[in-house]
Length: 380
Image (cartoon, rainbow, N blue to C red; front, side, top):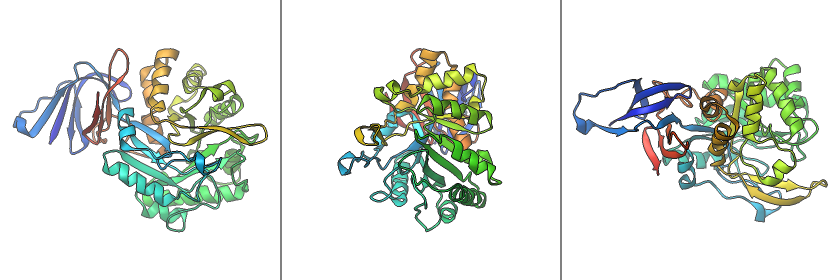
């Protein structure tokens, strides 16, 4: 079955003007100012978007879709993500991870949840491992997980600069990143190493030590939570200027902002104002993770959960509240993370790419419809 979308204001995520788009077998078959199908109308459906914005489906590089938490005991475990929660958010590609708890949760559970959500219409990948070293895997090694399991695209979320981290040596981290890199080469994947960065004094120094003490490329390292506080944000801008990619977390609570967290819209605006490489910047939601509050003694004093919908909310706020161009705001939640992660068929509206897309109201930028792999999974 073919689906023809007519009269879209297309962002690929760069603006392309008024375009028609043809979907065939879950892929984008053609994009042109005017597409006319002469075949039997029973073989295709047509949807007139009447000038609505058509954007790429959003790519979220960090989702705890099996839940997170546990730092305060079992009562603080957060819930799994459901398809019904995910569908309206516009996030069509999700990468799942473990966090602090790799005892009562496992990489196998993350993989199972990825396959569940994929079977329901989304595209899901995952990282092997968790916060801690040595890395816990499914097959017994990082290399085998990435090579033998299609959904495994890297290792993470490995914690640094955090009291919950393993406090491992530079050499231990080098070995993990190197194994993921080689596995990626063998599997035709990026083999990315995805790092949780806490509010510790080290900031991104561990990543610089990995580069300084090995032959590994900075492009294999992908740190998140880089807007956690002003000092880390400043260090992340330096890392970006050194050629690295950085990720900002959209799930937040008022206390985090009060304690110095840089909001994602403000972070993106600052990068644009400084003329830095926004093409290597992404947002991720940290959905269904715990958002723990610790006092100065390291004691847990409160917890909330990350929200998948925060990803697009932050991008829209960047446009409406900070005058960030729409194509830039869309890029940090689509094309940029897809490129950093090595997902070559995601994040763009272009011929041959997966037909993942979001229909937006041109006046409010409200999500009106979500299409994943050519199928409408939600409409308002």
